[in-house]
Amino acid sequence: MALTDEQKKEYVKAGGCFCPYCKEENIGGGLIETEVGIALQDVKCNVCKKQWRDIHELTGVAELEN
Image 1 (tube, helix red, strand yellow):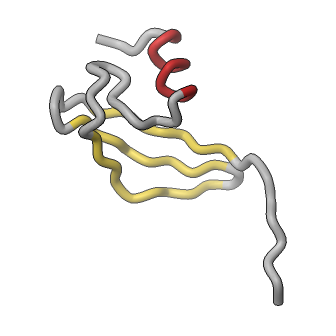
Image 2 (cartoon, helix red, strand yellow):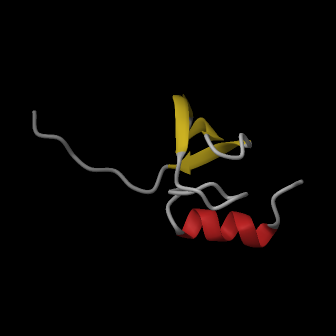
């Protein structure tokens, strides 16, 4: 079953803290891969076993003291 646009919106709005398929909070993420301006992370639900990829986009920049 494919995720609906509504399920995707709900998942993103909640900050990715539950499975977008079954709504369980028992999820785990793999390594984060970075590309220019985005980071990708494969995530799996430990209850329903569905898998998906989170896409994190650059939203700002903060200076660090030298």
